[in-house]
Amino acid sequence: MAQAKGVSEQAEELEFRQMQELGELMIYRSQINKLADGEWDDSPEFSLGPLKQSLMGEDPRLPQMPEKPTLVDFFNLRFGPSKQHLLQSAALGVKNGLSEKMVLACLLHDVSVIAFFRPDHGYWGAQMLEPYVDEEVAWAIRMHQALRFFPDESVGYEYPEAYAKRFGVDYQVEPYIQRDYDYARSHKWYMSARMICLNDLYAFDPDVEVQVEDFEDIIGRHFKQPEEGLGNDSSPAAHMWRTLRRPANAL
Ligand SMILES: [Fe+2]
Ligand SMILES: [Fe+2]
Image 1: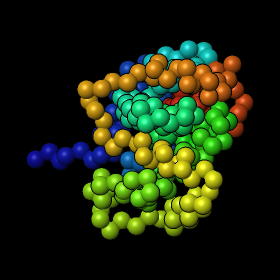
Image 2 (image 1 turned 120 degrees about the horizontal axis):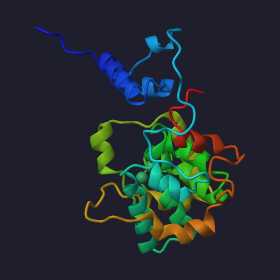
Image 3 (image 1 turned 180 degrees about the vertical axis):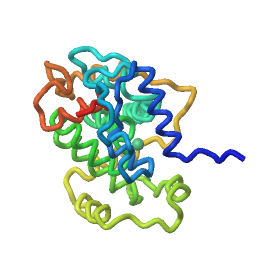
């Protein structure tokens, strides 16, 4: 009886097929992607085999981005269908009368989950956005990571039922989450981070499709879009947007 193929063997085959489709262009997966698939050791691709041309530049598998991409372009061309979570959270923020600045915070609060890294997503998201948004918006996005694990009865925020199901009823937060919660609890912007949690929709309404264009005015007023294009600028976070634009570049 033929043995079932291992996960890494299947992944290698997939990689090979992708190379073929691209006319033998070598496509690399970053180590972090391999680790996320449970692959710790170096794959054979890293040995010095026959030299193939590596992908450097626009990725032909992904939607083409304009020369000077805007945040809206990233929404439309890099964020997948799960961006509805961001859009519906922002729409809820509008409905609940949040300030424009905080609606933007809702619109971007899980940008890292949607497009970059899941672990520590609040911290990554804040870092991606810090040069382009008000300090309070970035702070609230960073801190929603910790706050979402702690109820606040004063505003009707309960520990999410979904967390008990997904992480187990006995799940305890890591010490750094507890530390950051303790710090945020007495901070002047505490309620801003809490508002993100309150307007964070846990389930999407499949019948509702919110468009990023609905928020173009708010983005225009509160997101400092670099003239040269998001990622082409020299901010401390520009490289993160470049990586999102071309996630498989060899270097
Ligand atoms: Fe989140
Ligand atoms: Fe969220």
